[in-house]
Length: 237
Image (cartoon, rainbow, N blue to C red; front, side):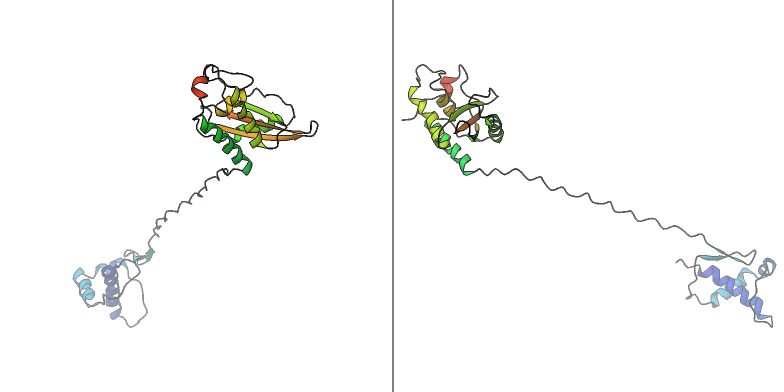
């Protein structure tokens, strides 16, 4: 609230003067003519005698020409800025598990043991290649897929370790002095191909033939013509 003490008390003092000469003590409004009879000095004398400690509602102001009161228009308080709703924090999507099964780890360990002998870096697991191979052997057809991966097939073995050791056993037929592809050594050269980085394998038991088909798919593929000398290295002694 704002104090309009001087202005309002001046009005009160004038009313006191006009009523002092009257017998009646009833309050009344004064006209503009009566108001002008009093000098500014008279008004200020009463102002000095008034009690300035009293506070008056500043929303109500007098109009002297009519003796009536008018209420000040209410001022709108500025609206407080609304708080923006916080966007929900998205939790990062869970990464697929990289934990390998015992069989998958066995496949990697067996490959990498043979590759280390031929100065080839260890392979890591490739889920895409494994799924591709698994889809292919569901028909129980013992033939190559012709897909984008390098590919080794086997059937009739007891487990993947025996399969990979069997592929590697072709090493005894490979001629480092005459490097290249041969049907007798193609499984071995893919196993130890230096440029290959990943592998994914799958198996399926086929009741009609009563055997299990094993398949491994490699990326990048091996057995590329002209690239044997730098990718199939002699074993370390």
